[in-house]
Length: 347
Image (cartoon, rainbow, N blue to C red; front, top):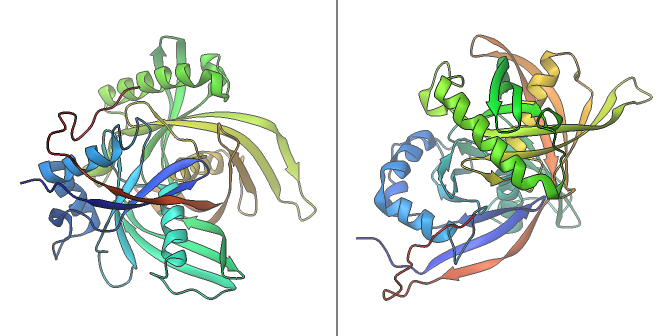
């Protein structure tokens, strides 16, 4: 029988993108002996878990672009937390903005002890692997959080897709999830709020076409296959040369993920995928900085911190820095007479 609550959440946002933290997750997700990746499979198959996700994500308690996470046990004592990321359509494999918010929440709440001044690593197990949120504090307050991701790599380049706005050519890269990446100008669009409805439509078309082609099949783990999001990019200015010879790149992006959700932040895992492509083409090198701006003007600062190999080819380790802020705490209740439970979604 599905629990009728109440359901307690702690709501944050990272760069404008919501992250609803559920500290007390459904019982089906908290059993012993499972990895976080395995718990995601349990969540996808559990009617109870899906019901709670729908309740907390959909209207009237959420909205079509709501995002959040169930806290679960980590894979082993080497991590502080485990998390299952969710959205209106299900459960994702990675989330940079959510990891940033989790790091800030863990330190602010005292769940992970931190000095008043310094950097504290909050280690988090997510379905795509183990990531770190390095939380910088000053005067007892969180200043920013740096998300160090799993290895990111190029999956495929130069795939033609026919859309309602003509043919476009996309690249695919992995940053904890698979992303299709292309300049917005290919669809005669800009990274601006008034173009968001058209970006959603084209993003959906690209995702559907690539998945139909099987273009984003993960080499090692089928649970990581499929296009999670489409990243539309736009260069705002030429790279800026710094005195030490490094460069700062300033790009805008909007990521359309799942079935038409729009990331208000610059998208942490999508930023990692973008860096993998820029590194592969030589447009970004260790020491360079990507100033990645979202459609609402929030910014992540990202860089390459290492090179490695993953999934039959070169890969990069990326670090993405952003800020997260508390929005509020919620105690959601359910009236058993409510015919709209667990909720609905309108785009």
